[in-house]
Amino acid sequence: MLAPSPALAPLPSPAPLPARLSLAEDGSIDGYASLFGEIDQARDMVMPGAFTQTLKQRGLRKIPMLFQHDPAEPVGVWLELAEDLRGLRARGRLIPDVARGRELLALLRAGAIDGLSIGYRTVRGQIDPRTRVRRLYQVDLWEISIVTFPLLNGARIATVKHTPRPSPQRAAAEAAWRRVRDATTHSDDAAEAPASPIRRGRIAATLSTRAGRKQALASITGGVRLGLSTRAAGSAQRADVGEEASS
Image 1 (spheres, rainbow, N blue to C red):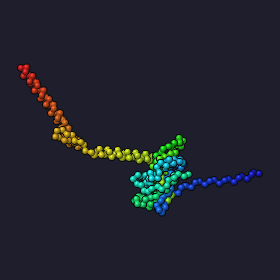
Image 2 (cartoon, rainbow, N blue to C red):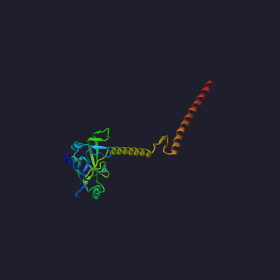
Image 3 (cartoon, rainbow, N blue to C red):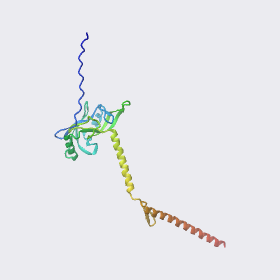
Image 4 (cartoon, helix red, strand yellow):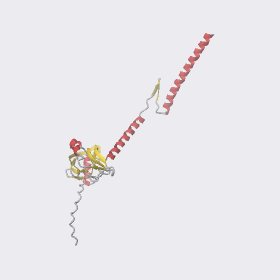
């Protein structure tokens, strides 16, 4: 007779996903800006303790709350940033005196937006050669933004409270776009700048028009012909003087 099998211990329930970015009545927001051990769309995985040094060095006031990672759009202040077992927990407050802050309050209350994203620089990381996932062991946190599409799905605001983070690919793409834009602006300025006039005696010509180019060419060729005719006359005069002397 078979012995009764021992009762299987119940499997531990999975850790609950963080609440979406939440908004309190006073305009404060709360959520996770980053989750440990989760792979984002850029195949980055933030490891526990990655924010410890940067939080000590920067403090709350040097980590702005932005909208869509735009440094021209600060929308509030962070009141608390702390690592826990799940990730980087962020609690802050939107500033309703700012127009964009009022808009975000309305959007968060309507549930139209709730993403959080972090802007950072990798200090220490390592790419797994098998999975091609980059593990981030230490990062320099620059900012936390309220965004429409967070790279990490779990980085959400729970009450108008939450923060997501940006990817290295996006930062590189934005930097490349700024370089192209600046190069285009400089080339346009150079093209629109009037050509410096070529002055020869009292004649001033510009090479930006066809008539100006013809005028400049005529002034140059005229001078060449004048020089040639002057040298020819001098040579003829010296020949005449030589003939008179010989005669």
